[in-house]
Amino acid sequence: MAYDVVVIGTGPGGYVCAIKAAQLDLKTAVVEKQATHGGTCVNVGCIPSKALLHASEMFMEAQHSFADLGVEVSPKLNLKQMLAHKTQTVEQNTKGLDFLIKKNKIDVLRGTGKIIAAGKVSVTDGDGKTQEVETKNIVIATGSDVAGIPGVEVAFDEKVILSSTGALDLAKVPGHLVVVGGGVIGLELGSVWARLGAKVTVVEFLDSILGGMDSEVAKQFQRMLGKQGFEFKLGAKVTAVAKTKKGATVTFEPVKGGDAQTIEADAVLVATGRRPYTEGLGLSEAGVELDQRGRVKTDAHWRTNVPGIYAIGDVIAGPMLAHKAEDEGVAVAETIAGQAGHVNYDVIPGVVYTSPEVASVGKTEDQLKAEGIDYKVGKFPFSANGRARAMLHTDGFVKILADKATDRVLGGHILGFGAGEMIHEIAVLMEFSGSSEDLARTCHAHPTMSETVKEAALATFFKPIHI
Image 1: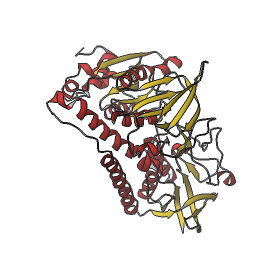
Image 2: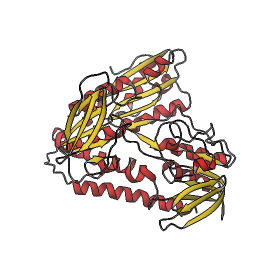
Image 3: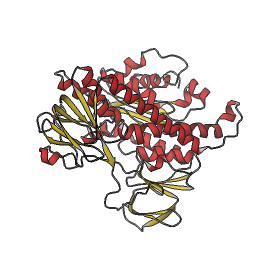
Image 4: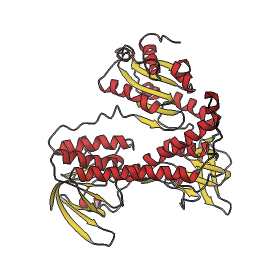
């Protein structure tokens, strides 16, 4: 059977691309080697981690905050049930994807996909049987895999030496968890086990956590995590991770020079990023070019150098975020259908789902300084917000950055409870090239946490009211 579009991979980018293509009346098929759709995000990433993050946060609040609200409880951890909640959440989402794919009449080709040439894809199932399909367009949406530690051999057993996958399924709370990597994944999963009782030590190569995020936000966030019991070893290059009879050891040395140190742990989570997954796709045979980092090279319309072959998501350049892949999936489907697909890469939010959350969109102060852009800053703390006080969530602040001459908002950064939900009004504003005054003059319901965003906007173009 010949198709208009064959999408290889059904993670967030792949399944969204397929659904959009089908909605545009393109005959569509997806190739998926796993038993369920959703890729890393739905099965062993975004969704299960958020289930555990929420559950562990409720446990922490029951321990520390409920009494202040007049709710007296004696919480007891049932880790087995917490993990069951995670599993059920994943199952609900994968079943939902099955429904959507069937609803949109998308053919599912189970097995490992390989591009034979432009217009031809082979699919090999678990029994080794191979079928070939013809298609006018191929979309590579194979996502990414655990990167490991550059130059260090790591033997993942997912019991003691963990990737993000194993860190979602520990049978018991480790006494001491060492997290290699101070990025989003490491801090999120580290915070889960910290709330449940683990001592957490983060070993990070850079001099700060959350590399790439606004430095002021990162510094304040690190202090907050320190109060929650996190210990940080920054500017530290890991040279060895080894399993022992009692657990594991991590050896590191200061990047700027000094003696090596070795710390013992019950478990080690290696969270040093991800790499594009291109193995076995037949890209070199098909003539598809890769860049120096192993990513598929594409132009501004997600086209590879081979006509009729596109790529999206983690497998190409840009932030490895599910929502970035989804937007690219929609845009590619529209492009194939002859429409004007578009993604605004200047307005892609990023969220760290810890407690409190960290959310960012657009430029950071560090980037604006480096680019020589004159800007102004408006900030407002949650401690001055009535709803935040009522909810006992007064940590953090909102920061808005705007062009000094035009007042156009160039970036927004939120550290605080619900930051991941509140960042989007700044994103929408930026999508329409709005100013801080536009946002400040938009009526916000009272009392809400979102009033903090309005006050930060007021502070950007003139003065805030409530501080």
